[in-house]
Structures are given as C-alpha cells and as structure tokens.
Image (cartoon, rainbow, N blue to C red; front, side, top):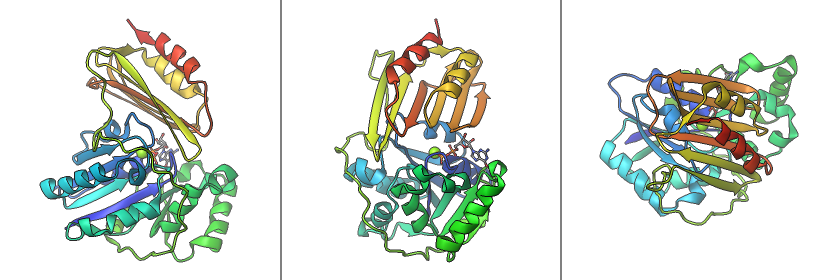
Length: 324
Ligand SMILES: Nc1nc2c(ncn2[C@@H]2O[C@H](COP(=O)(O)OP(=O)(O)O)[C@@H](O)[C@H]2O)c(=O)[nH]1
Ligand SMILES: [Mg+2]
C-alpha cells in the first residue's frame, strides 16, 4: 500500500515549497510520487517540482474532485499500480474541496492501494486577519479537515499575526497540533501520523466543471502554434495562463518586473530566458525567483486573481518582453 498524505492550504500558503522540502529530505531508498492539482489550466507546479526525485503527475484546470472525474481516478490507479510508490503526496489546488477529495481517496477503488495518513494544512497566519481569506469557504474547510496545521512563513509575521493565530487556535484549533515553520520545513516524520480528524464538513458549494479529457497531463501547445492562452474561473477566482513554444525567449529583467507588478494576487512562471530557465513564484508580495542553466521545454505563466483582471493589457505587456 502507498502511504498517502494530502498537503492542503490556501493559494500560495506554501504547499509546493513544503513538498520540495519533503522530497529533498526523503529517504534515498524510497520511491515517492507527487500528484499536483492546480486551479489554473496551464500547470506550473509540475515544472517547479521537476527533477526532485519523485514520479510526478499533474491535474490542471480546477479542483481534482470536480475537473476530472473518471480519467483522474483511472490515472491515479495506474500511477499506484505501475509505480508502486512507497509514498504519495497530493497537492490539491488552494481552492480545492478537502471533503470531496478525502471522500474520493477513501472510496472502494483505492482500498488496498492507498493508506491514507495525516492531512497536512499549510496556513499563512497573516491571512487570519483578512476577511477575504478568513471567511473563504475553501480556506476554512481546509483548516477544518486538517490533522496537522503548519503555520508557515513565520519570517513574515508581525506581532498581530501571532496574536491572530493564538486566538484562532483557542477558538477552533485546539485538538490539532499547530507547528510554526518557515519555507515549508516540516518534519518528515509527521507524515506517518494517522488520520484522526473526522470532522463533519458541510457540503461545499462546488460546481463540477465540464469533464475534461486530458487526464493526468498538463496542457500542451497544439502543433505549430507558437503560443496559447487559457482562462479558468471558479470559486470566485479567475486565472489566466499562457504557454509559449520552446523557441520563445523572454527578457529576464522584463519578465521579473512584469510578474512583480502584475495587479493580481498570485503569479507563477517558468520561462525560457537567454541564460536558461527563470522560475518565478509570487503570492501577494512574497516573491521567489530562481534561475536554472537548462532551458525549459516551453514557457508557462499563470496569474490568479479574486476578480477579473485586464488580461489583454497584461498580455500586451507580456508580448513586449519577448526577445526576437
Ligand atoms: N517569506 C516566505 N515566503 C514563503 C515561505 N514559504 C513559501 N514562501 C513563498 O510563498 C509563495 C507561494 O509558495 P508555494 O509553495 O508555491 O505555495 P502553494 O500555492 O501553496 O503551493 C512562493 O513565492 C514561496 O517562495 C516562507 O516561509 N516565507
Ligand atoms: Mg502549489
């Protein structure tokens, strides 16, 4: 059986960062798999997690319990049966439905394959004082479904964030351990803790999107197309993503500025630059930039915002930072 953990948390709370940390500290002799499910159509976390020593599957385009239905289930079963991983880490989208995902993983199809252990929820304590997050149904359900809460991004907390976390714990979090961490540096041993929290969650307002046929694969560029754009909408959020072919090059500084200044809450990119790859990950003002000497197969950019943004104006500016 594959030991399996859900790694939940709201948009940009640090799920992928945590998974990267876990993969870096996994026992060498073990085989791990990661299933990453993104709100955006484009699929970028896969690129952020590439070459980190695990089998990787991506489900882009919305919450995994809504988007994919049967193809997702067949794909997950194949992953378990063919790869026989010792451990599977599942990152649902920050706008995912933990109740339905847990129901999906505990159904008969996976009995004998999945040993579902502790659900870990990442929390950015700064968001407890912001009603747009604190009152968001997905944000609340994820915390309610957690067995372990990781209050991440400690380095960014102000004294009031600590107080908000303490107040929240006193009101809701008492039965669950809350660990304070930075950069997703959780103790790997926590993954072996059992699932103990069986809180009855309300049925979330989730609207099953139309079934997609792509199964467990990130979106690709149609043959001979140089670029395409894909929009997604749901749970009051909107995303816009672009894929450019492997030939397209971007100006490094121009791309960093475009991402930094884009008037959206969440931005991610893995793009080709003259020096190789540029990886940018931004949540609010939290910005992480990396370069790698190897060029990516294509360039991918994804923006997420809680209301409509002027995607066309952003696209015009994006096209101007293409080189040649
Ligand atoms: N300042 C700070 N930023 C962090 C920390 N952990 C993650 N981040 C940043 O927060 C952003 C979102 O992280 P990510 O792991 O992609 O979030 P996800 O959407 O939950 O997968 C990235 O820019 C990360 O570099 C932390 O402990 N402190
Ligand atoms: Mg992520």
